[in-house]
Picture 1 (cartoon, rainbow, N blue to C red):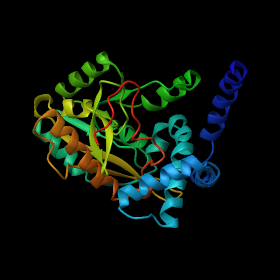
Picture 2 (picture 1 turned 120 degrees about the vertical axis):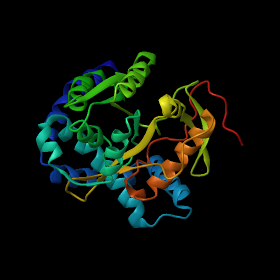
Picture 3 (picture 1 turned 45 degrees about the horizontal axis):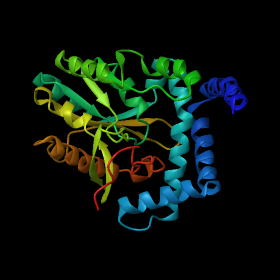
Picture 4 (picture 1 turned 180 degrees about the horizontal axis):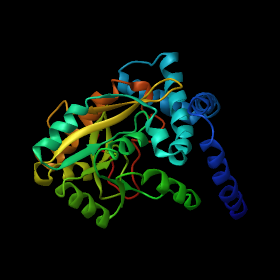
Length: 293
C-alpha cells in the first residue's frame, strides 16, 4: 500500500502537469471518452448514476441522457488541470457567454452581504475565477486527501481576487467577515457534510444529509443569495449563469435548508446531464442518525 502511494505521489502530479498543457477541446474529447468508459466498466458507478438521474427526472433516463451525464463527468475531471495551470486570462477567455450578471450587479448596488452557492453542475471551478475578476470573493476550501495535489489545486483556485478559507470554524468566520466587508462568500451547498454539520432534507424525493452552513450564512445580515454555475459547451468553453432563488430562502434554519435543496433541484433540472450524479449525495456520515423513513 505504501509503495502504491509513493508511486501515485510521483506519477499523478506529472500526469496533471501533462494534461494541463493540452488544449481544452482535446481534454473535453478525452474526458468524454474516459467518462463513458468508466460508466461501462464500473458497474456500481453505472447503477449509481442511472438511479440518481432517474430519481431526478421522475422517469428512466434515455441512453443519450445516461451517456451525456457520464461524458460530462469525465470532461469535468480532465478540464481541471487546464484551469489550474493555464494563465488566468487564457482560462477566462473560454467563458463564451454570461447569463444573469445583472442579478449580481443589483445585489452589489443594494449593499447587503452576498452569498454565492455553486452546486456540482457543469464547471463549478470557473465561476469563482470569473467572479474574482470583478469583485473580491472568499470561497470555502477543503484540502484534498492526496496531499501531493494540494499545491497545484491551491494555486489554481486562489487567483485574481479569490481567497480560500479553510473548511473549519476559522474559515466560517472568514466567510462571514468577507460578507460584511462587501465581498462575496461562496461554497458548494450540495457537498455532503460530516456528522453534526447537517440535517436530513429531501433532495429529489429522497432524504439527503445536507449541510446547514449555507442556510446559516444566508441569515447573516439579511444576505442576498445567488446561484452560480458554469454550463459546459460541447468541446468548447463555458457559459456562466447567475440566478436568484426561484423560491425564497427564509424562515427557520431547517426551512432554509429545505428551500436551498428545492432551489438546487430547479437549477439542476435545467441541465441534468451536467450534474455530477456519480457523487454519493445520499451517503450517511459515520455516526449520524439514520435518515427519516
